[in-house]
Length: 90
Image 1: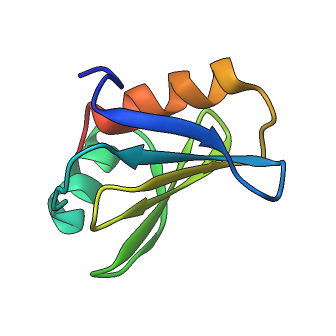
Image 2: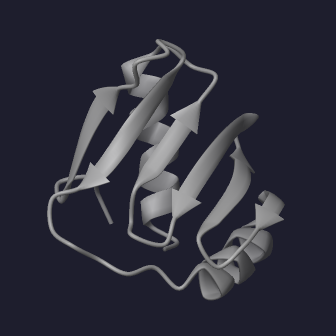
């Protein structure tokens, strides 16, 4: 899956990017976390509302509404690459 259904924009903090779905969606975080683990990603936290997964060394918050936040980066290309991997598993 690609990011064509998402908008990627810098977060106000300047050290993260928000990845927002263009249409409403619902993510089953329990199933997504299972796929993250199968892919070898570390799931740092898992709740019914948000999961935090580490991808390429960067923490990514995955929300049940489809929003992502790729943290600890200022590089758009890096954030897009990480978000593409995550979107492919949700």
